[in-house]
Each structure stands twice: as C-alpha cells, then as structure tokens.
Length: 311
Image (cartoon, rainbow, N blue to C red; front, side, top):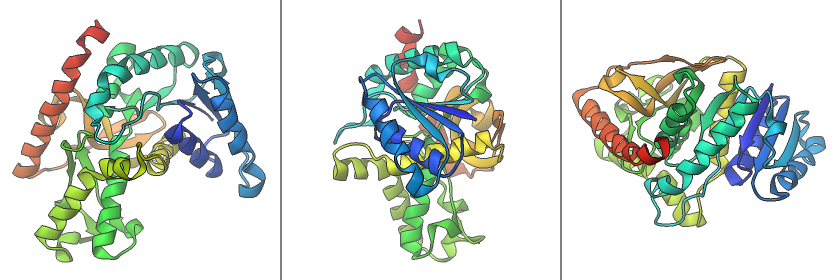
C-alpha cells in the first residue's frame, strides 16, 4: 500500500513517522515545495529504520507529483500553520488556493486515491476539495474529529486520573475553537458514564479545555501542534488501508444527516477500505442538536468565502 503525504512539515513528517514504525503502509512519499526539504525529512526518517525495526520505504520529493503515482491514500497537510492568536478561520484565504492545487495534482497521478484533508480551516478545506475535484463523498475525509476526540479523552483522563485508553469519548461538529462539540453526555470509562465520576462543573471544564486544546498548544509552542495531529492522521489512514471499519469522528459531506446538507462537518463515521463507508446518525438531545446547528451555521459562513475559488 502506498501513501503520499503532501507537506513535509511537522504534521506531515510526524504522520509519515507513525505510518512507518507501525507498518501501516509499505511505501510513503513525502512531497514539499521547498527544495530538498522532503528529501531531508525522508532521509532522517529512513535512518530510524534499523533502530525501530520498520520496513516501510520513505521517499522525499520536491514538487514532483509523478513520484506520487498510484497512491492509495493522499494526505494533504500543506498550507501555513497557525501562529499564536490566529484562528483556523483566518487561514482560509491563504490555504484554499494551496489545497485546491494539491488536490488537482495528486489526482492526475492517483485518480483512485482517497484524500484525507488536514489543512486548516479543515472543514472548509474538505468541502473545497470535494467540490473542486468532483470526487464521490466517500473519498474525501477531513481528519479533525479524530484529533479533537483524542484531546477530549486526554482531558477526561486527567480529570478522572484514569488511562485515556480506557475512556471512550467523541467530539463532533466543526473543527474550530468555538464550533466543536465534546459529547460529555456520551463519554464513558470502561462502559460507565463519566458523569458518575465527574460533576457537571468538572465536565464543563473538560469540554472547555478540549475546545481550545489546539490554541493552548499553539500558545505554548509558538506554532501548531504536530505529534497528536500526525498520529491522528495515521490512525485514520490505518483504518482505510487495513479495512478496519473503525468508528471515527471525521469531517464528511452530509446529505440530510443531522438535519444538514451540502456541508462537510465532523460526525461519527465507519472508516474502511472505501473511505467513508457509513455515517452514523446518533441520537442527540435538544441541547446537542442546537449546538450542532450553530456549529454548522459557522462552518457554512466560512464556506461562503470559497465562491471565488470554486468559480
């Protein structure tokens, strides 16, 4: 199996790293526009092979899309990262043109690829990719919910003082600081609702911390995070390539689900070899439905800025 990662920065390289040492794909191509940058990242990663025991072949190329031919999955991380104080939404004007160009180029050489979008604002970039390429909706997936859900589980684990791997929790809605919806009501610790361990006030604090989880890291690091985003992409790619049919919150095109249409936004999906194999329409309560509708309105407002690019 072959995976191309467009954008060899921190997130792209971390994604390639996890894919390689977990043996998710036999070949990974890192592509970047900076001369020699992807080649250097690939060489550095390949020099880990004897010490970590992986057999994946990692290749780096400078803007040569022919080397990405016949990729099964293409991950788009390219675009500028967030700076301190910058919202994901402020990136739209810059990153939209980049993502559209990348999608067109990769499909020229890998017409059957499933595309995973990471670039921010992620829901809008997923929508742009789907509309600009004309691909069926199962083949364009926004990664954000997988990352947001992992952060939600992290904050719950801290509040509970329990391992995050024993916690089941999901974030739906837009991948933004004010649009994501941590489903505290449905979160559980080994099958037991976390509400039996945490008060409403404690759960509200966990939800609030989750929503600004990315901004918190940006403030600490001076740029966007990369380890957790890279691992989240690899987790999603693993479910695709190995047909694992995991339930993962992803940004996908809705056509009536959750009362929304013509929008890419985070909802629980079954992810397998065909990409999005099922959208799960879970029962939300009135408050969650209202929050989801509000989140969708915000995402739709951003999508309106794409009219010039989409023509």
